[in-house]
Length: 366
Ligand code: M6R
Image (cartoon, protein in one colour):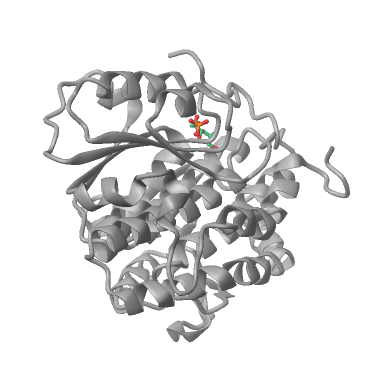
């Protein structure tokens, strides 16, 4: 039931504060994450983990890409991320004491399942599924599970599944950091309190819907777009580009902002809008110079930036101010305006938002 919403996708976008809260429920203690949420014995197991291998497809793969930044930076664990369709068909050199993590909304994606099955005898410490469906093949066949509590996702374009996956992966990062004693307890406590506020921040981002709808109008006659991000916002840009192509059929590509002058800048002109996610972190100054490069070629910029980033609206720059949030949680918050953007572009174009052409919700065959 879509309720008051015109599409399932819009309903699911707006459910995010609630389902993120639900995904956190019972998993946070006093200033620390409850590692046992991953199952009995998880703390002992996690203490032994020296490497993480993540495997997933599509949007779930993007969640894994964000997690790599978190796991390496916050928990000090080396991490590799790969799309399941590649991982399953190659000989992987398994790192010692490596945890195999699969991420999937449905838990039935053929490539992800095949990757898990291949991993079984490959010498991993254990397998962990981050999944939205309790009764799924992936959950049944993994040693450990952390369920995302997104509820049923009907829209083919994944939205609330992604943000709850990110929350689950942040819980994994904190748990590994705690169990391995590689994360400062003060930093852990700080992140736990920020996680508790996250649903409120997401609600604030959703309240900008009308502003984003206006921005979306500008895309209705465009055929190509670039999405730029740096650090953990690069996978967020990838996810934004995937959403736009899936439901509005506009060609969209994501680049880490620093790669711009290594090729894609050649494409930039006034018909090629450039969408940038720019939170207020140490990379923002670098991003500002990337933005100037785009402006110098007549490129139209759409910038989602922290209110404190010191960016200004101007000729050819449409700025959308985002609520302030810590760097660590910024990827979750900045996903919201990109979801809304692609939703409204698709509505302007009149495409089938919930059931895009050529796509299925669950890819259970190769
Ligand atoms: O159910 P899964 O998370 O394993 O599905 C993976 C992808 O098929 C899925 O995320 C797909 O990319 C979505 N349509 C993206 O919106």
